[in-house]
Length: 336
Image (cartoon, rainbow, N blue to C red; front, side):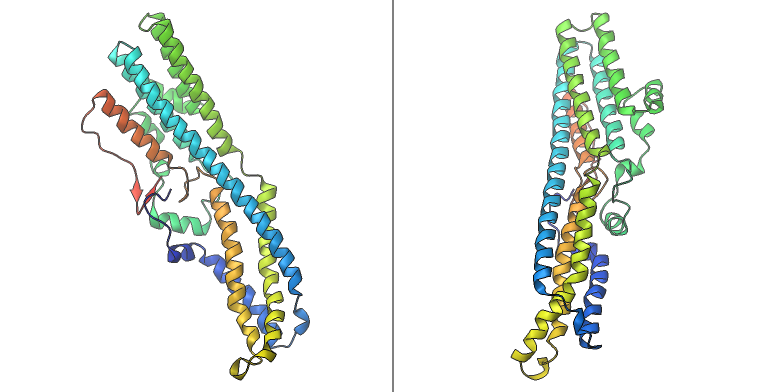
């Protein structure tokens, strides 16, 4: 996610330039046919374009609102995960007299976060991170840590080799890590290493984590409705294709009201104006598309890696660990 600066216009133009190339061709061809070949029958009444533009504006606004709400839900879930993890770590320190056992519970919690992060970064068929303009932009500005690191190497920092292998061999590693956590709290209760009240408090926290995991998996594994995404993109493309045919008729009417070199050539001004308006609608669609999937590893994703690393730093500091440096990836204002 872009954190400490704003997007620049050249940066945004570079991201959308492939659409600009296509829109330029779509804007030029109708004007050439109308002005050079004299195919004046191609002109479309601008009232038709106006009605279509209104429909597309409503559709694009609905899509962007829904994808923004989806992003906000995802961010809220991960803020809750980070907050609840801090509370859990503090409870382990205060409710578990055995320091080694408390550290084991906290390390297993960090392992759960690592497995959940990697699960969130797994590509899904409907995601757009592999589209050319996103791949190019991401490579220029940042890397996705979970795509570069092996989960086993991360789990080795928190779990024993046997536990790490058990987690990795399961169909749902994050759930398996939480199951190990629950089994360990039960073992501590059976050994009277914690009180029944402490066990109940820790189990309550684990239930909350399970709920939060299900909520973040719902956003990851259930896409923004495909029918809405398709119909909005379709409407935008129809508008971009038909817009120049409506613009040429409007500019042709201006020929009689001007003098000099512009007289008879006003139709050519339909090209830049059509291009700008089409680019605005196409950019709205592309922005909405980029916001649909808040965990795919895009520039505007929820910064789950940064949240987890800041959490680990805070927890290690609480436990008295010294000398641990931040590993949070931030490049050119981006944090993932």
